[in-house]
View 1 (cartoon, rainbow, N blue to C red):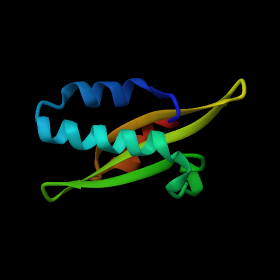
View 2: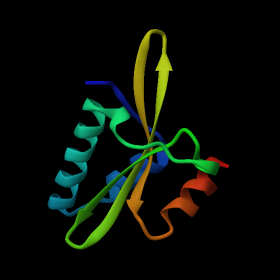
View 3: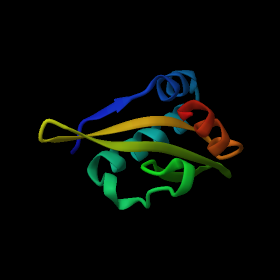
View 4: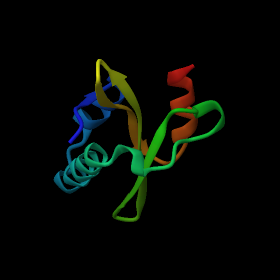
Length: 97
């Protein structure tokens, strides 16, 4: 498994989650990303270099945005942001730019 780091928007989002089932669903997603970060297709255009992992939980679509960083002969998965798909890409662009 690859090491993982969280940027402040992702940390804040995960701390706010109170529902145990949703927390567990995100935990599984993070575990899958750590095991195979290159599995997902990278975004294009303005979000070049960002990967997105989509998930559904109780009929609501969520996304985890991450990038893969190389650091001294090691690869680190950096979770940039997480949240519902509604306006997700606009919020991500606002954070990154």
